[in-house]
Image (cartoon, rainbow, N blue to C red; front, side):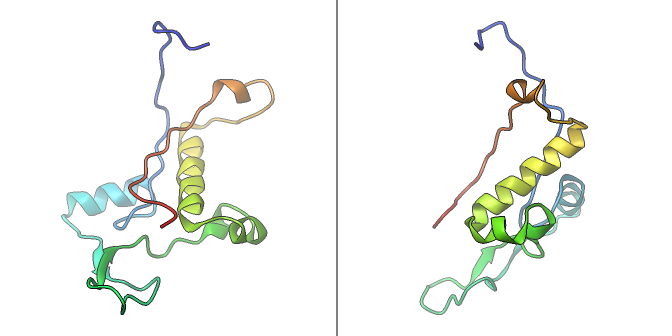
Amino acid sequence: MLTINNRVVVTGIGILCPVGLNASSTWEALIAGKSGIDYITLFDPEPFATKFAGEVKGFEPTDYVSRKEARHMDRFIQVAVAASSQAVKQAGIQINLSNQNNIGVIIGSGFGGL
């Protein structure tokens, strides 16, 4: 059980966002002042007042999960799985039966499943 005296360590970061598909490319884009806002391409925006959004472009869910698994996930879940995978990889953690109950992933998302 987690008590007030337990400590948490952030050992890896995963990011997929409109300006980058990983932590390093996102950081470089932010430092360069790049915007991820562009014309909407993932669906037909015609019925909507705005035609611009911050889309995660170039993301391939099959880089992280099988095609079958990807078909059964909303896009925001695919992105969350990818970011989590990046964080675990960056941390150098090998998840196995002996440590699986001591590892957690915290996910932050602006929107999902809309």
